[in-house]
Image (cartoon, rainbow, N blue to C red; front, top):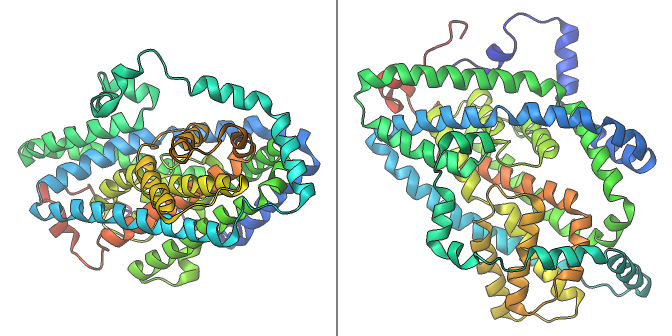
Length: 457
């Protein structure tokens, strides 16, 4: 497998170019651009809105490589692992990761919410400002009530059978065209299992073709990384211009809880990856930077999958076959961000309305949030947010008025959620997948399905 430097820089570069690359990929540069974007959104919103189309074009470029990379990597990995009898052990580890992440995520956000009490507002002026803002957003609750009304055919779609029917694509090409990631992932898993039963001699040509597609997608992602800093600045500026300072002030304590929870997860993720790859902590942070910038720019766990694979395989040298399988699967199952939103949001609403939560109430919130989070793969931020009404209904908490507050800061909370989820997926993948120093790659991949080595490697 060619290294990241081989794919991105096939020819020698000057010292000036090397310095420029270091500055561009420095974490300090990222923080400066985020701060500049916030200032631009507050003081020059017209400029932020004018630059928005440029960033949207860049987002389309980032997301267009997701499905080709997903199809090629998952089919190749499943095929290889089917022919390796030791691969079954990874399935048990994925299940354990889901349980551990759910328990720790609920405990972390629950503890911070109970200690910091983001919904406890004692200042009369703050409560008045909160009430005025909610009243000014009256149309939001009306729209929510309409969107949450039970449709006529809800009975036909409810239950496990209805959920399963939504996962199975009737036309895989239609699913690809619509970007239905979960349906495409299910097809890739089944197709990879079938190809794994084909004799290796016949499957070799398909494996080579899939490897070529994978390499092309990695090269594209390495090209796109150069535009990330500018796109990050533009999108942060636009989001700040849309939100404005007032909702951020009113929801400041809730955002603080979300931010601290996300920061704790990111620190833990960098630590796990650094230990598993035996790299220095600062070196690991620098390797993480392109992935984190993609997360901030796209706010999409699915769109971040190519960058997770690029980080772990190309930069940190984890096993390609295992990482390419684990990253998409765990992106669908490890929904740390949604857990943070549901647990923190419900406790915030309870505190806002003076409702004391008992131990059974907290247990119900934790278990229900962990289960509900598993259903959020591929959902947009507002759709994920609307499902909080299910938890509120269990506890008989008002949700429609508070919904306006969450909508106002959705761009910020969605960024925190995606950062938490992507960091969790990266750390769990690094914890499960073997590093290149631990195994011989020819031992991990059947001989007939080994990737074609790049001539420049």
